[in-house]
Amino acid sequence: MEQKILNQSIKNAHLEHLKQMGKVIHHRYGKKYNINLDQLYKFIESIDFTFTSTQKKMTKRTFKRKILPSKDRCQARVWKEGKLTKTSQSTLKYGEQCRNKKAKCQDYCRMHLKNLRHGGITSEPSRFIKGVYKHHNLKKKK
Image (cartoon, rainbow, N blue to C red; front, side, top):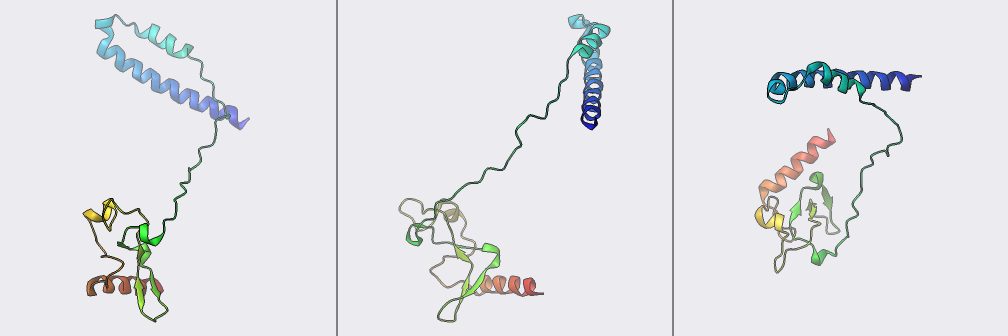
């Protein structure tokens, strides 16, 4: 029963919208193309609206990324939600290595060739970058 009411409401809303569009069409082009407003309304009301619930549900497609070996990946350091990890030598590791494939004959992917915001993964980050990571992790703990 609810489905019928919903379908009728949708049909009425569409009819009203089409009638408004019909008025605009008649006003703009009625004289030029000899459009009769009553005939236009009759045509609009003769349209058969049918609504069915057999449509497929839209699902988000997932993309499965190939995991490249570290040597084939871009050498840029990425934010990775401000990730700070301790290494086996009790030093801090800031962020992670970019997952994109290196550009041809380069150490970085095309994106990081243009903008290397957090530096390279093989080099020590600047004091500023270290501060940003540490500040983010302090805020996260509170």
